[in-house]
Length: 440
Image 1 (cartoon, helix red, strand yellow):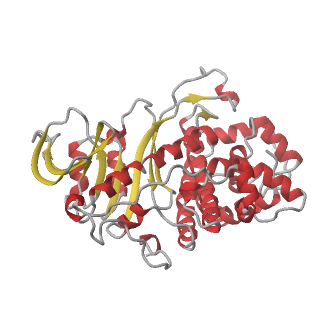
Image 2 (cartoon, rainbow, N blue to C red; image 1 turned 30 degrees about the vertical axis):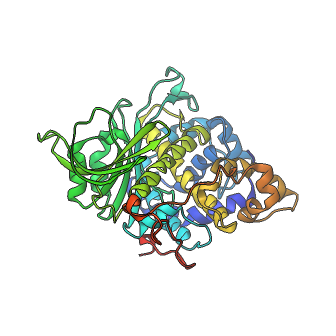
Image 3 (cartoon, one colour; image 1 turned 180 degrees about the vertical axis):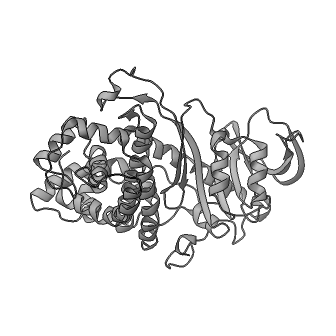
């Protein structure tokens, strides 16, 4: 992909301030400020990602002949550039990632036209944050550096744990484990250290660990997860027992140190001939009604969408180097670029007043190539307005096709007893700027 001036300016405006603020730390690490400086290396890594450069040799040619992003043409040997990739401290990208997040959150908070899903709006009136956490294996190593020529293709390269904000869709934290076969429970301590009270977590069954659940509850952190089929459950109280919905208070666990008895709500919904079961630590249906729990958990899939984007679209399935530092560098850089892509997608969603879920981040990314052509012809000068153009939306598939209409969200705590009441379905609040804990 060729570089476009407008796209380069967009990335430069977002990243230059945070790169500048890390210059002091760069020098504290004993790194010399000669040719391969911090700004140049950040530009080099991001160029590998967003322009899908096939390798360091081609990256060196680009740098020498035309430069990239905020870097002027500079002659650097391939050996020096490859060596810098192997040794450049990944912690610098980690710090840049964490510093840019508040800026991206502020940009999200300034947009008020794109609606949030009904279940998310309802839950934000009860909780300050809604996060999704999961782990994913880094599948393969791919030769972009000479250091990988002796590594067998397809070698597993570790595991990453990620927490994503379901509201903004921005990644909140990334962790790395060298063992690719590590379970998701490897990241439990990271979550306990990171997550604050009044947060609702959506967890898959990789975090099916009773002691961890109790530790979350003790910190006033709540969660929704799926029930395992063979789980031994003691029923305590019935809230709803209908034809297609059951909501009950239960106790689960054996009472040992590793599997303490935990009090939860078991919510079961009939889908066709199958019952789907969910567990939540929110014990009061008035706070989190059963159908809200079900709808929220379905949105846990957003983290799988994020994994698919960073691994398949942005190339994290194919690592540039076999060194642990190099793998971490690519992880942080890729999620940094993903956050910038989410910000652009959210700006487009706000421009056309659609939920972010309706915007295809993949087609936004692929559409950068077509924007460059339009920019060169003098037909476009603004990224957001270009993708918001109805003709471009239709041509590139920026807006996902609308599936069959979803039924209204039932927010009644006890649906069988409240049919026909004014509080049965979700009611949209009056049109006003959305205020959440992100703006606090």
